[in-house]
Image 1: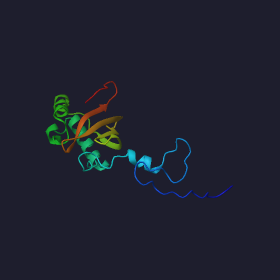
Image 2: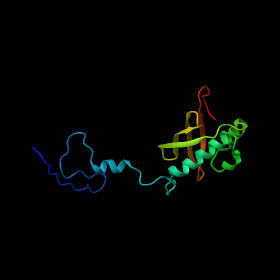
Image 3: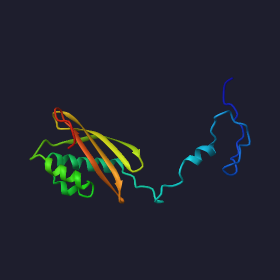
Image 4: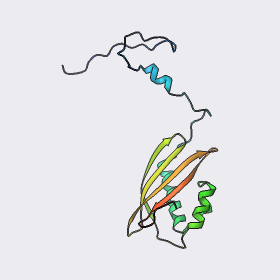
Length: 156
């Protein structure tokens, strides 16, 4: 048989305990079952603001400047947790290579977490950059930042 097959009519069940109007195969989920598992809103009532890719790109580029010793870490105070800001200040280079940030990819493993990875180059080699942003007390803050350089793996 070719073409589209007709669908059985569907009427949503009235109330949680109502049974569907048509017989379903054993173990088949209904739309009502799926919607009941999705919370209507998170506890606070307001959705978390999104971090846009352009915004993340600018913040990561600035973090690379801090890493290279070309910008003071205090300029990123609103974006960094105090612990990360302290680590970046302690590990900043005198003046390192100038990084050019290229691609930035994001992943959202939880509602209040955005993980970012990207590629940056120094003109001589391409490096990977990773960061993790968490939504805390009404702000997005970077909790982890790493530049994966050959021979020197670990947090930066």
